[in-house]
Image (cartoon, rainbow, N blue to C red; front, side, top):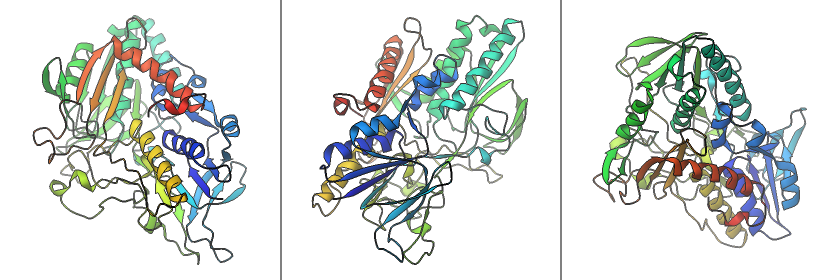
Length: 481
Protein backbone atom coordinates (compact mmCIF):
# COMPACT_ATOMS: atom_id res chain seq x y z
CA UNK A 1 0.00 0.00 0.00
CA UNK A 2 1.27 3.47 -0.93
CA UNK A 3 0.25 6.73 0.67
CA UNK A 4 0.01 9.91 -1.42
CA UNK A 5 -0.53 13.15 0.48
CA UNK A 6 -1.54 16.40 -1.23
CA UNK A 7 -1.12 19.73 0.55
CA UNK A 8 -3.79 22.11 -0.70
CA UNK A 9 -7.13 21.74 -2.45
CA UNK A 10 -7.00 24.53 -5.00
CA UNK A 11 -6.97 24.07 -8.76
CA UNK A 12 -3.66 22.18 -8.79
CA UNK A 13 -4.02 20.17 -5.57
CA UNK A 14 -7.62 19.14 -6.18
CA UNK A 15 -6.76 18.07 -9.73
CA UNK A 16 -3.74 16.07 -8.57
CA UNK A 17 -5.68 14.32 -5.81
CA UNK A 18 -8.62 13.46 -8.06
CA UNK A 19 -6.46 11.92 -10.79
CA UNK A 20 -4.20 10.11 -8.32
CA UNK A 21 -7.23 8.52 -6.70
CA UNK A 22 -8.65 7.57 -10.11
CA UNK A 23 -5.42 5.93 -11.26
CA UNK A 24 -4.21 4.25 -8.06
CA UNK A 25 -5.25 0.84 -6.77
CA UNK A 26 -7.76 0.27 -3.98
CA UNK A 27 -5.01 -0.54 -1.52
CA UNK A 28 -3.36 2.85 -2.00
CA UNK A 29 -4.51 5.95 -0.14
CA UNK A 30 -4.80 9.59 -1.20
CA UNK A 31 -5.06 12.23 1.51
CA UNK A 32 -5.73 15.92 1.00
CA UNK A 33 -4.76 18.42 3.70
CA UNK A 34 -6.31 21.86 3.34
CA UNK A 35 -7.20 24.70 5.75
CA UNK A 36 -10.36 25.46 3.77
CA UNK A 37 -13.44 23.22 3.78
CA UNK A 38 -14.31 24.07 0.19
CA UNK A 39 -12.96 24.34 -3.32
CA UNK A 40 -13.05 27.81 -4.89
CA UNK A 41 -13.27 28.35 -8.63
CA UNK A 42 -11.13 31.48 -8.38
CA UNK A 43 -11.77 32.97 -11.88
CA UNK A 44 -15.42 33.58 -10.98
CA UNK A 45 -14.47 35.59 -7.87
CA UNK A 46 -14.41 38.50 -10.31
CA UNK A 47 -18.20 38.25 -10.71
CA UNK A 48 -18.65 37.97 -6.96
CA UNK A 49 -16.57 41.13 -6.57
CA UNK A 50 -18.99 43.23 -8.64
CA UNK A 51 -22.10 41.75 -7.03
CA UNK A 52 -23.18 39.46 -9.87
CA UNK A 53 -22.70 36.22 -7.94
CA UNK A 54 -22.92 35.15 -4.33
CA UNK A 55 -19.84 33.45 -2.82
CA UNK A 56 -21.86 30.23 -2.58
CA UNK A 57 -21.92 30.07 -6.40
CA UNK A 58 -18.13 29.84 -6.72
CA UNK A 59 -17.36 27.26 -4.02
CA UNK A 60 -18.20 23.60 -3.43
CA UNK A 61 -17.77 21.71 -0.12
CA UNK A 62 -14.91 19.24 -0.29
CA UNK A 63 -15.80 16.70 2.41
CA UNK A 64 -18.73 15.05 0.58
CA UNK A 65 -16.81 15.03 -2.70
CA UNK A 66 -13.80 13.34 -1.15
CA UNK A 67 -15.91 10.88 0.83
CA UNK A 68 -17.63 9.78 -2.37
CA UNK A 69 -14.33 9.54 -4.25
CA UNK A 70 -12.48 7.63 -1.53
CA UNK A 71 -10.05 10.46 -0.72
CA UNK A 72 -9.15 11.13 2.91
CA UNK A 73 -9.60 14.76 3.94
CA UNK A 74 -7.83 16.55 6.77
CA UNK A 75 -9.18 20.04 7.45
CA UNK A 76 -6.03 21.72 8.70
CA UNK A 77 -3.20 24.00 7.60
CA UNK A 78 0.02 22.26 6.63
CA UNK A 79 2.84 23.37 8.90
CA UNK A 80 5.98 21.28 8.40
CA UNK A 81 7.51 18.54 6.26
CA UNK A 82 9.68 15.80 7.79
CA UNK A 83 11.08 14.05 4.68
CA UNK A 84 13.38 11.75 6.72
CA UNK A 85 10.94 10.94 9.50
CA UNK A 86 12.19 11.48 13.05
CA UNK A 87 14.01 9.73 15.86
CA UNK A 88 11.10 7.30 16.34
CA UNK A 89 10.59 6.31 12.70
CA UNK A 90 12.13 6.86 9.28
CA UNK A 91 8.69 7.19 7.70
CA UNK A 92 8.29 10.67 6.13
CA UNK A 93 5.38 12.71 7.41
CA UNK A 94 3.86 16.18 7.46
CA UNK A 95 2.28 18.06 10.33
CA UNK A 96 -0.84 20.17 9.99
CA UNK A 97 -2.71 22.29 12.54
CA UNK A 98 -6.52 22.43 12.65
CA UNK A 99 -8.51 25.50 13.63
CA UNK A 100 -9.01 24.10 17.15
CA UNK A 101 -5.26 23.70 17.62
CA UNK A 102 -5.17 19.95 17.07
CA UNK A 103 -1.92 18.83 15.41
CA UNK A 104 -2.21 16.12 12.74
CA UNK A 105 0.78 13.94 11.88
CA UNK A 106 0.22 12.45 8.42
CA UNK A 107 2.70 9.91 6.97
CA UNK A 108 3.38 9.68 3.25
CA UNK A 109 5.31 7.79 0.59
CA UNK A 110 4.78 10.60 -1.94
CA UNK A 111 4.00 14.23 -1.21
CA UNK A 112 2.57 16.92 -3.50
CA UNK A 113 2.95 20.49 -2.26
CA UNK A 114 0.08 22.39 -3.86
CA UNK A 115 -0.40 24.94 -1.08
CA UNK A 116 -0.67 27.88 -3.46
CA UNK A 117 0.34 31.38 -2.35
CA UNK A 118 0.24 33.37 0.85
CA UNK A 119 -1.45 36.72 0.20
CA UNK A 120 1.15 39.23 1.36
CA UNK A 121 -0.94 42.32 2.03
CA UNK A 122 1.63 43.11 4.73
CA UNK A 123 4.20 44.01 2.08
CA UNK A 124 2.40 47.33 1.45
CA UNK A 125 1.28 49.50 4.35
CA UNK A 126 -2.51 49.87 4.42
CA UNK A 127 -3.13 47.25 1.72
CA UNK A 128 -6.00 44.78 1.99
CA UNK A 129 -9.62 44.50 3.11
CA UNK A 130 -9.00 43.26 6.64
CA UNK A 131 -6.38 45.60 8.11
CA UNK A 132 -6.13 48.13 5.31
CA UNK A 133 -8.07 50.43 3.02
CA UNK A 134 -8.35 48.48 -0.25
CA UNK A 135 -10.44 45.63 -1.58
CA UNK A 136 -9.39 42.24 -3.01
CA UNK A 137 -10.95 39.41 -5.02
CA UNK A 138 -8.41 36.76 -4.05
CA UNK A 139 -10.93 34.81 -1.95
CA UNK A 140 -14.73 34.55 -2.04
CA UNK A 141 -14.96 36.44 1.27
CA UNK A 142 -12.73 39.23 -0.01
CA UNK A 143 -14.75 39.43 -3.23
CA UNK A 144 -18.00 39.65 -1.24
CA UNK A 145 -16.61 42.60 0.74
CA UNK A 146 -15.57 44.24 -2.54
CA UNK A 147 -19.10 43.83 -3.91
CA UNK A 148 -20.60 45.40 -0.81
CA UNK A 149 -18.29 48.40 -1.05
CA UNK A 150 -18.85 48.67 -4.81
CA UNK A 151 -22.63 48.72 -4.39
CA UNK A 152 -22.29 51.47 -1.81
CA UNK A 153 -20.35 53.53 -4.35
CA UNK A 154 -23.09 52.97 -6.93
CA UNK A 155 -25.71 54.26 -4.50
CA UNK A 156 -23.66 57.38 -3.82
CA UNK A 157 -23.34 58.03 -7.55
CA UNK A 158 -27.09 57.61 -7.95
CA UNK A 159 -27.44 60.44 -5.46
CA UNK A 160 -25.31 62.60 -7.74
CA UNK A 161 -21.82 62.18 -6.26
CA UNK A 162 -18.74 61.75 -8.43
CA UNK A 163 -16.49 58.86 -7.33
CA UNK A 164 -12.95 57.72 -8.06
CA UNK A 165 -12.00 54.07 -8.66
CA UNK A 166 -8.51 52.54 -8.78
CA UNK A 167 -7.91 48.90 -9.72
CA UNK A 168 -4.66 47.04 -10.22
CA UNK A 169 -1.50 45.87 -8.44
CA UNK A 170 -0.79 46.85 -4.84
CA UNK A 171 2.95 46.21 -4.97
CA UNK A 172 5.82 46.33 -7.45
CA UNK A 173 6.25 42.55 -7.49
CA UNK A 174 2.60 41.50 -7.90
CA UNK A 175 1.43 38.80 -10.25
CA UNK A 176 -2.08 37.94 -11.55
CA UNK A 177 -2.50 41.25 -13.35
CA UNK A 178 -4.97 39.38 -15.57
CA UNK A 179 -7.41 39.03 -12.66
CA UNK A 180 -7.24 42.74 -11.88
CA UNK A 181 -7.62 43.51 -15.61
CA UNK A 182 -10.77 41.42 -15.72
CA UNK A 183 -12.10 43.09 -12.59
CA UNK A 184 -11.67 46.65 -13.90
CA UNK A 185 -13.51 46.00 -17.17
CA UNK A 186 -16.33 44.26 -15.28
CA UNK A 187 -16.50 47.19 -12.86
CA UNK A 188 -16.73 49.63 -15.76
CA UNK A 189 -19.45 47.53 -17.41
CA UNK A 190 -21.50 47.42 -14.22
CA UNK A 191 -21.27 51.19 -13.76
CA UNK A 192 -22.68 51.59 -17.26
CA UNK A 193 -25.39 49.04 -16.58
CA UNK A 194 -26.45 50.95 -13.49
CA UNK A 195 -26.50 54.23 -15.41
CA UNK A 196 -23.81 55.98 -13.35
CA UNK A 197 -20.74 55.64 -15.57
CA UNK A 198 -20.67 59.39 -16.25
CA UNK A 199 -19.99 60.03 -12.55
CA UNK A 200 -17.02 57.67 -12.29
CA UNK A 201 -13.29 58.23 -12.85
CA UNK A 202 -11.58 54.85 -13.33
CA UNK A 203 -7.81 54.31 -13.23
CA UNK A 204 -5.75 51.17 -13.86
CA UNK A 205 -2.58 51.16 -11.76
CA UNK A 206 -0.03 48.46 -12.54
CA UNK A 207 3.57 47.34 -12.08
CA UNK A 208 3.66 46.31 -15.75
CA UNK A 209 6.20 48.13 -17.92
CA UNK A 210 3.57 48.30 -20.65
CA UNK A 211 -0.11 47.40 -20.68
CA UNK A 212 -0.72 43.74 -21.41
CA UNK A 213 2.53 42.50 -19.88
CA UNK A 214 0.69 40.11 -17.48
CA UNK A 215 4.01 38.93 -16.03
CA UNK A 216 4.80 37.22 -19.34
CA UNK A 217 6.84 40.03 -20.84
CA UNK A 218 3.84 41.01 -22.92
CA UNK A 219 3.08 39.29 -26.18
CA UNK A 220 2.31 39.85 -29.81
CA UNK A 221 -1.05 38.48 -30.86
CA UNK A 222 -2.88 37.89 -34.10
CA UNK A 223 -6.00 40.05 -34.20
CA UNK A 224 -8.19 40.47 -37.28
CA UNK A 225 -5.37 39.44 -39.57
CA UNK A 226 -2.75 41.71 -38.01
CA UNK A 227 0.03 41.07 -35.50
CA UNK A 228 -0.18 43.64 -32.72
CA UNK A 229 1.48 43.98 -29.29
CA UNK A 230 -0.71 43.23 -26.29
CA UNK A 231 -0.10 46.79 -25.10
CA UNK A 232 -2.08 48.04 -28.11
CA UNK A 233 -4.77 45.40 -27.59
CA UNK A 234 -5.27 46.34 -23.93
CA UNK A 235 -4.80 50.04 -24.52
CA UNK A 236 -7.54 50.17 -27.14
CA UNK A 237 -9.90 48.25 -24.85
CA UNK A 238 -9.25 50.75 -22.02
CA UNK A 239 -9.51 53.74 -24.35
CA UNK A 240 -12.89 52.56 -25.67
CA UNK A 241 -14.14 52.36 -22.09
CA UNK A 242 -12.66 55.63 -20.85
CA UNK A 243 -10.27 53.96 -18.41
CA UNK A 244 -7.11 55.90 -17.52
CA UNK A 245 -3.90 54.05 -16.68
CA UNK A 246 -0.65 54.34 -14.74
CA UNK A 247 2.07 51.81 -15.57
CA UNK A 248 5.48 51.01 -14.04
CA UNK A 249 4.20 51.73 -10.52
CA UNK A 250 4.84 50.34 -7.04
CA UNK A 251 2.30 51.17 -4.35
CA UNK A 252 4.15 52.36 -1.23
CA UNK A 253 1.23 53.04 1.09
CA UNK A 254 -2.57 52.97 1.02
CA UNK A 255 -4.50 55.44 3.16
CA UNK A 256 -8.24 55.76 3.61
CA UNK A 257 -8.74 58.07 0.64
CA UNK A 258 -5.48 57.98 -1.31
CA UNK A 259 -2.53 55.84 -2.23
CA UNK A 260 1.14 56.73 -2.55
CA UNK A 261 3.21 55.16 -5.29
CA UNK A 262 6.63 55.25 -6.87
CA UNK A 263 7.23 54.93 -10.59
CA UNK A 264 10.13 53.22 -12.32
CA UNK A 265 11.90 56.56 -12.85
CA UNK A 266 12.03 57.02 -9.07
CA UNK A 267 9.32 59.68 -8.84
CA UNK A 268 6.81 59.48 -5.96
CA UNK A 269 3.20 60.54 -6.43
CA UNK A 270 -0.22 60.02 -4.91
CA UNK A 271 -3.71 59.38 -6.21
CA UNK A 272 -7.02 59.92 -4.46
CA UNK A 273 -9.71 57.24 -4.54
CA UNK A 274 -13.07 56.34 -3.11
CA UNK A 275 -12.81 52.64 -4.02
CA UNK A 276 -9.62 50.65 -4.64
CA UNK A 277 -9.24 46.99 -5.55
CA UNK A 278 -5.51 46.19 -5.42
CA UNK A 279 -4.02 42.72 -5.57
CA UNK A 280 -1.25 41.75 -3.12
CA UNK A 281 2.10 40.14 -3.91
CA UNK A 282 2.46 36.42 -3.28
CA UNK A 283 4.92 34.27 -1.39
CA UNK A 284 4.94 30.63 -0.37
CA UNK A 285 2.84 29.75 2.66
CA UNK A 286 5.83 29.39 4.99
CA UNK A 287 6.15 25.62 5.30
CA UNK A 288 9.13 24.45 7.34
CA UNK A 289 11.20 21.31 6.82
CA UNK A 290 13.10 19.31 9.42
CA UNK A 291 15.65 16.50 9.23
CA UNK A 292 15.51 13.27 11.18
CA UNK A 293 17.52 14.87 14.00
CA UNK A 294 15.16 17.83 14.16
CA UNK A 295 17.52 20.24 12.39
CA UNK A 296 15.92 22.91 10.23
CA UNK A 297 16.44 21.97 6.56
CA UNK A 298 13.89 24.39 5.10
CA UNK A 299 16.46 25.86 2.71
CA UNK A 300 16.96 22.43 1.13
CA UNK A 301 13.36 22.37 -0.05
CA UNK A 302 12.48 26.04 -0.40
CA UNK A 303 13.87 29.28 -1.76
CA UNK A 304 13.78 32.51 0.32
CA UNK A 305 10.47 33.31 -1.40
CA UNK A 306 9.11 30.21 0.43
CA UNK A 307 8.23 28.57 -2.89
CA UNK A 308 9.56 25.03 -3.39
CA UNK A 309 12.70 24.16 -5.32
CA UNK A 310 12.01 21.78 -8.19
CA UNK A 311 13.87 20.58 -11.31
CA UNK A 312 14.59 24.07 -12.62
CA UNK A 313 17.86 25.92 -13.13
CA UNK A 314 18.13 28.23 -10.10
CA UNK A 315 21.70 29.34 -10.81
CA UNK A 316 22.44 33.03 -10.73
CA UNK A 317 22.98 34.34 -14.24
CA UNK A 318 21.99 37.49 -16.12
CA UNK A 319 18.42 37.74 -17.36
CA UNK A 320 19.61 37.83 -20.97
CA UNK A 321 21.18 34.37 -20.57
CA UNK A 322 18.06 32.61 -19.32
CA UNK A 323 16.43 30.14 -21.68
CA UNK A 324 13.04 28.49 -21.90
CA UNK A 325 14.78 25.18 -21.16
CA UNK A 326 15.67 26.42 -17.67
CA UNK A 327 12.05 26.07 -16.53
CA UNK A 328 10.99 22.90 -14.66
CA UNK A 329 9.50 19.91 -16.42
CA UNK A 330 8.64 17.30 -13.76
CA UNK A 331 8.28 19.49 -10.61
CA UNK A 332 10.21 16.95 -8.56
CA UNK A 333 12.28 18.12 -5.58
CA UNK A 334 16.01 17.71 -6.28
CA UNK A 335 16.56 16.96 -2.58
CA UNK A 336 13.84 14.31 -2.09
CA UNK A 337 12.58 12.42 -5.16
CA UNK A 338 9.27 11.52 -3.50
CA UNK A 339 8.30 15.21 -3.07
CA UNK A 340 6.76 17.31 -5.84
CA UNK A 341 5.38 20.85 -6.09
CA UNK A 342 2.50 21.87 -8.31
CA UNK A 343 0.80 25.09 -9.35
CA UNK A 344 1.84 28.30 -7.64
CA UNK A 345 3.78 26.34 -4.96
CA UNK A 346 6.82 25.74 -7.21
CA UNK A 347 9.52 28.39 -7.41
CA UNK A 348 10.00 29.89 -10.88
CA UNK A 349 13.67 30.04 -11.90
CA UNK A 350 13.56 33.64 -13.10
CA UNK A 351 11.35 36.50 -14.21
CA UNK A 352 9.60 36.21 -17.56
CA UNK A 353 9.16 39.98 -17.76
CA UNK A 354 12.40 41.96 -17.92
CA UNK A 355 13.54 42.69 -14.33
CA UNK A 356 13.50 46.41 -13.61
CA UNK A 357 14.45 48.46 -10.56
CA UNK A 358 13.87 52.14 -9.86
CA UNK A 359 16.77 54.49 -9.00
CA UNK A 360 15.67 54.06 -5.37
CA UNK A 361 16.27 50.30 -5.53
CA UNK A 362 12.57 49.39 -5.72
CA UNK A 363 11.80 46.31 -7.80
CA UNK A 364 8.92 47.08 -10.16
CA UNK A 365 8.44 43.93 -12.23
CA UNK A 366 5.46 41.52 -12.41
CA UNK A 367 6.15 38.03 -11.07
CA UNK A 368 5.55 35.08 -13.42
CA UNK A 369 1.96 33.77 -13.50
CA UNK A 370 1.39 30.09 -12.71
CA UNK A 371 -2.38 29.95 -12.23
CA UNK A 372 -5.41 28.43 -13.92
CA UNK A 373 -4.81 26.06 -16.81
CA UNK A 374 -1.05 25.63 -16.17
CA UNK A 375 -1.68 24.80 -12.49
CA UNK A 376 -4.26 22.14 -13.32
CA UNK A 377 -2.08 20.62 -16.04
CA UNK A 378 0.91 20.45 -13.70
CA UNK A 379 -1.24 18.83 -11.00
CA UNK A 380 -2.38 16.12 -13.40
CA UNK A 381 1.15 15.48 -14.73
CA UNK A 382 2.61 15.20 -11.23
CA UNK A 383 -0.13 12.74 -10.22
CA UNK A 384 0.57 10.59 -13.29
CA UNK A 385 4.30 10.49 -12.56
CA UNK A 386 3.70 9.49 -8.94
CA UNK A 387 1.28 6.73 -9.93
CA UNK A 388 3.86 5.39 -12.40
CA UNK A 389 6.64 5.56 -9.79
CA UNK A 390 4.45 3.63 -7.35
CA UNK A 391 4.10 1.10 -10.15
CA UNK A 392 7.87 0.77 -10.47
CA UNK A 393 9.04 3.62 -12.70
CA UNK A 394 12.45 4.84 -11.46
CA UNK A 395 11.79 8.50 -12.24
CA UNK A 396 8.95 10.88 -13.21
CA UNK A 397 7.32 9.76 -16.45
CA UNK A 398 5.39 12.88 -17.43
CA UNK A 399 6.42 16.45 -18.13
CA UNK A 400 4.67 19.81 -18.44
CA UNK A 401 7.05 22.72 -18.87
CA UNK A 402 5.22 26.03 -19.12
CA UNK A 403 7.88 26.91 -21.66
CA UNK A 404 6.22 24.27 -23.86
CA UNK A 405 2.66 24.84 -22.73
CA UNK A 406 0.03 27.20 -24.06
CA UNK A 407 -2.56 29.04 -21.99
CA UNK A 408 -6.00 30.39 -22.74
CA UNK A 409 -7.28 33.43 -20.89
CA UNK A 410 -10.91 34.49 -21.25
CA UNK A 411 -11.33 37.79 -19.41
CA UNK A 412 -14.97 38.73 -19.03
CA UNK A 413 -15.66 42.38 -19.77
CA UNK A 414 -19.26 42.47 -18.57
CA UNK A 415 -21.28 39.52 -17.30
CA UNK A 416 -24.42 39.81 -19.38
CA UNK A 417 -25.31 36.97 -21.77
CA UNK A 418 -26.55 39.41 -24.43
CA UNK A 419 -24.55 42.64 -24.01
CA UNK A 420 -21.45 41.38 -22.19
CA UNK A 421 -18.15 40.79 -23.94
CA UNK A 422 -14.85 39.09 -23.17
CA UNK A 423 -11.26 39.51 -24.21
CA UNK A 424 -10.11 36.07 -25.27
CA UNK A 425 -6.36 35.52 -25.54
CA UNK A 426 -4.42 32.38 -26.41
CA UNK A 427 -0.64 32.36 -25.94
CA UNK A 428 1.84 29.63 -26.87
CA UNK A 429 4.18 29.08 -25.18
CA UNK A 430 3.66 30.86 -21.87
CA UNK A 431 7.41 31.40 -21.42
CA UNK A 432 8.72 32.91 -24.66
CA UNK A 433 11.25 30.79 -26.50
CA UNK A 434 13.35 32.96 -28.79
CA UNK A 435 15.42 30.00 -29.98
CA UNK A 436 12.36 28.31 -31.49
CA UNK A 437 10.50 31.50 -32.39
CA UNK A 438 13.15 34.17 -33.02
CA UNK A 439 10.86 37.02 -34.08
CA UNK A 440 8.34 37.17 -31.23
CA UNK A 441 9.31 34.31 -28.92
CA UNK A 442 5.98 32.60 -29.54
CA UNK A 443 4.17 30.67 -32.26
CA UNK A 444 2.03 33.30 -33.99
CA UNK A 445 -0.25 30.63 -35.46
CA UNK A 446 -1.24 29.73 -31.87
CA UNK A 447 -1.12 33.17 -30.22
CA UNK A 448 -4.08 35.42 -30.86
CA UNK A 449 -6.73 37.59 -29.26
CA UNK A 450 -10.33 38.62 -29.89
CA UNK A 451 -12.96 40.73 -28.13
CA UNK A 452 -16.63 39.85 -28.41
CA UNK A 453 -19.78 38.26 -27.03
CA UNK A 454 -18.68 34.73 -27.98
CA UNK A 455 -15.85 34.91 -25.46
CA UNK A 456 -18.31 35.81 -22.74
CA UNK A 457 -20.39 32.73 -23.49
CA UNK A 458 -17.21 30.66 -23.26
CA UNK A 459 -16.50 32.24 -19.87
CA UNK A 460 -19.97 31.24 -18.62
CA UNK A 461 -19.48 27.73 -19.99
CA UNK A 462 -16.09 27.42 -18.26
CA UNK A 463 -17.62 28.48 -14.93
CA UNK A 464 -20.22 25.70 -14.99
CA UNK A 465 -17.96 23.12 -16.62
CA UNK A 466 -15.12 23.44 -14.11
CA UNK A 467 -17.39 23.50 -11.10
CA UNK A 468 -18.94 20.30 -12.47
CA UNK A 469 -15.45 18.85 -12.80
CA UNK A 470 -14.53 19.99 -9.28
CA UNK A 471 -17.48 18.01 -7.91
CA UNK A 472 -16.02 14.88 -9.59
CA UNK A 473 -19.36 14.13 -11.20
CA UNK A 474 -19.73 11.47 -13.93
CA UNK A 475 -17.28 12.04 -16.77
CA UNK A 476 -15.35 14.75 -14.89
CA UNK A 477 -12.00 13.35 -16.05
CA UNK A 478 -12.92 13.89 -19.70
CA UNK A 479 -13.10 17.67 -19.24
CA UNK A 480 -9.69 19.04 -20.26
CA UNK A 481 -7.60 21.11 -17.90
